[in-house]
Image (tube, rainbow, N blue to C red; front, side):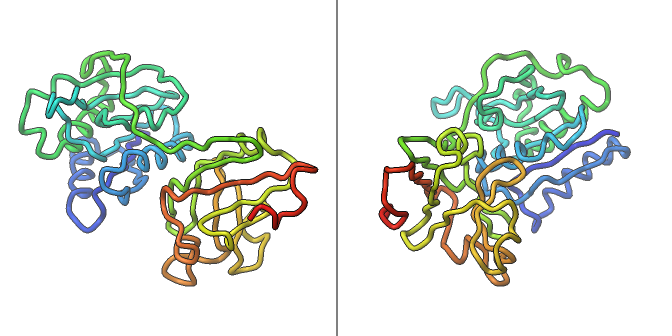
Length: 285
């Protein structure tokens, strides 16, 4: 089965996403189109990278991922060294995006299997009017039609890396940030369980966020380990620390975003308390 995923900042109130899907289906009526998200914050490459990185491993080999966020190429404009439509081959899947920092943010410390730049499309000014459709979708459809990647792109070894917030560890402390608020209002951080275990496994801790009266001193295995309406911290399926309200959600009883005022880029701090370092948890404040 041919699969194309779509990740864009186009929203669903306009015709843009429908146009993308119509273009795909008019050329390949056997393709399965999967929407990852069309609600990426406009031009937010880091959020797009987070969303795709969180689910690409669930797709089969050969899947083509189209990332239509900040997709208009830049050709030596305003002193820039340019941003060109490109193709990343990674884990036997294709990721097609403008090289605007997405690829570096998506890969993080990983290395690509190969990276390719689509130089030839830049000479056609008409393609710039809707680059996600005219450049990125077109490249994906070319691959599905049987064209080899070297027929539509040239090999390259360099790709840009968008600025992304990184969790850091200090003595008995981890500092991270909220990187995504999901549909329920859950605040997902960039603090991974691997880092947590390295710094303070089996050591008492407190998770501090937003203000001194907002803290959690236990990480639960699931939301329902606390009573409905209670704050909870969990490591999600991808291993990242998440702050939530059990059975709470934006638009109803309120999720962590609404009740705690948590937003993307807000700091989340974990303070560990090794034996003898502090008398009580209260002394953290």
